[in-house]
Structures are given as C-alpha cells and as structure tokens.
Amino acid sequence: MTHDPLIPAKAGTQAEPAAKRKGRLGSRLRGNERGKNNLAVLAPYLWLALFFALPFALVAKLSFSHSALAIPPYAPRLDLSHGLTGLADFLRGLDLATYRRLASDRLYLLAYLSSLGFAGLSTAILLVIGYPMAYGIARCRPRLRQALVLAVILPFWTSFLIRIYAWIAVLKPAGLLNQALHLIGLPSVTLLDTNAGVVLGLVYAYLPFMVLPLYAVLERQDESLIEAAQDLGLTPRRAFWRVTVPLSAPGVAAGVLLSFIPMVGEFVVPDLMGGSRTLMLGRTIWTEFFADRDWPAASAVAMVLLATLVVPLVLVQRRRAALLP
Image (cartoon, rainbow, N blue to C red; front, top):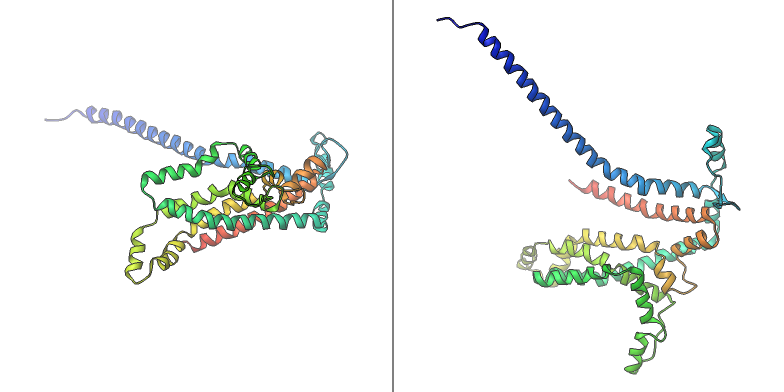
C-alpha cells in the first residue's frame, strides 16, 4: 500500500508556521518582560537624577559663582540665547573665590567644628540610651515588643516642629520643668537657649533613628549563641560583650550614620532651642541665604558639608564590600 506524497508535505507546511508563530510569541513575551525589568531598574536612577543630581548640580554651579546686586543675587548666569558664546562667557566667570573666602574666614571653620561637636556628642548619648532600649525591646514578649516598637515610632505621627515647640514649653523659665522642680523644693534650671538645650533637642529628635536599626539587628540574633557562650564558661555579662555587641555592629553603624549625618546640618533644633551664640552649619547656611543673600557662600558651605559627609561614607562602604566574601 502506498502513501500519498502530498499528505506529509501538507502536514509539514502546516506544522512549520505554527512553530514559527509560537517562537515569535515567546520572543515577544521575553522582550516585553525585559522591557519591564529595564523600566523597573531605570526608575530609581531617574528619581535620583531628578531629586538629587539636578539640585546638586545647581548648588555646585552657585558655589562657583559670586555675589551680585541682581535678582537672583549671583553671577555669572547662563544665557543660552547666545549659544556657545554665552556658555563660554558663563564658564569663564566661574571661579574658586567663594571657597577661598570660606577657608580664610574663621566663622565658617568654627561653625563646621561646632556642628561636628554637637552631632558627635548627641550621637554618643543616643548610642548610650538607644542600645539598652533596643536590647530590652528585642528581648520582650512578641505582643509587648510590638507595642514598644509602636511607642518608638509614635512621635513620627506628629509634626517635628510641633514637638520642638512642646519642648520649648517644657524648658522655658516658667515652663513645666521648673514648675515641677519648684514643687519638690529644687532650684530652677536654665536649659532653653543653651548648648545643653540643643543637645537635648537633638537627642530627643533622633532617638528613633538609633533605636530602630539596633532593634532590627538585635531581634534577629540567635539566642542559642548566648547559651553556647555561657556553656563554654562565659558569664552573662561577658557573653553580652563578646557575642551580642559584635553581632550588633551593623545596627550600631546604621544608627550612628542615620543620626550623625542629619544632625550635622540640623537647623530647626539649634534655631529654636539654642541661643544666639549657638553656631551650627544649618543656621549659617540659612543666614547666608536669607539674611545676607549671599547664595554662593551658602552653596559653598553646603558643598563642603556634603563632601565631608559623603566621602567617609563611600570609603566605609568600599571597605565593607572588600571584606565581604
């Protein structure tokens, strides 16, 4: 019995286009998936470019300008209507005179050192207060632990400015603190408009930024490691210092960075709770921008502050990356 030669040929011609269509559909789906993945990866970079890189470029441009009696109060300004000639004139007008003025003016150096001092002292106090708090929360029962974490986060539900004004009502000469001291027969204290008041405000404002990273690390630690250390002869106190504290180092580093960096440039707390002699970079930048209208100087101070904070972060990150397996 013979087969018709047209039958296999016809089946082949029908099967081949179907396979091709399936292959094209699969490649189209893979292409769409790659496109979505590319958009998902591109979105954070667009966000950083729009809200960090562009403002950073504008501030950097201002820092290389010089003050002028104009609106806005700086020169040179880029005039694209003149094409390449305008761009060349703009670049020729940029100089380092503002940075040289910062280096020669003792006020900016004192403000920088004062900001580092306030931030460093406040960060140390935060670590001393925040570590026991985070450790205690991490060792509580689950239900109580959730309530305590909520209590730490609760101040974020209120405006930061309102909370600082509440502290002013507590610390002012006729405030709640001195009234309570008077009732128990103790002398009144002066904390408002002093350096101590600034430290108190900074510690209060940034305490959650220290507690939450520490809690996140301590809560994940395996308690069997402490038991094993005690089985090997360590006392509970030595087991804490030899096991718990080293394992919580990432949380300590995160809390210190999250607290120290914004405190260096803090403006609200030193302005409202510090005296007129309280010197910090945040107040210096505000004064240069709005009181003296010296935008180039304020931008140069901001650039120096950013550089001194970002460079150590990059070096620490590279060292951590080099230590990872």
